[in-house]
Image 1 (cartoon, rainbow, N blue to C red):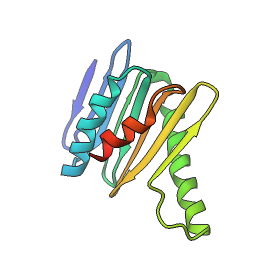
Image 2: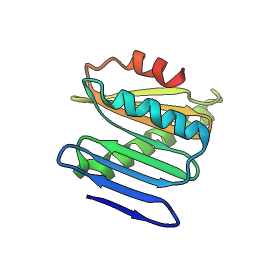
Image 3: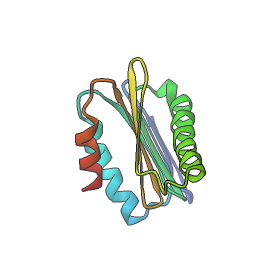
Image 4: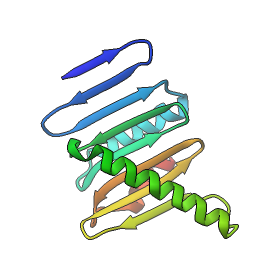
Length: 134
C-alpha cells in the first residue's frame, strides 16, 4: 500500500516484510546518506535505519510494528549522547554504539543529519560506519 499526499511529500509504504516512511523535503547530503543507507539496509543482520534532518526523516525497518519504539529509542540515544558530551565538555558525539541482548544500535551525526542503524548484535558495525562516512 502506498499513499502520497501533496504538498508536504509524505510517503508511507508498508509491505509484509518492511515499512518505509519518508517525511519532508530532502537536501543533497540527506539524499546521499539515504542512498547509502538503502544499500546498507540490504546487508545480512541489518534490521533497518532511521535518518533525520531538521526538515526530513526516513524510517526503513523490517519490523513495522516497532517503528515508534525504535524511533523513540534512537532519539533518546542521540539526545543522551549530546547531553553527556555537553556536560563533560567533550565536543560533539560522532558515533555511539549501544548493544542490548539481541540488538545493536549505531548512531551517527553527519552535519545536521542524525542516523541510526539497527542491527543484530553480531553484525559488523565498523564496515557500516565506513560506508556511511564515505
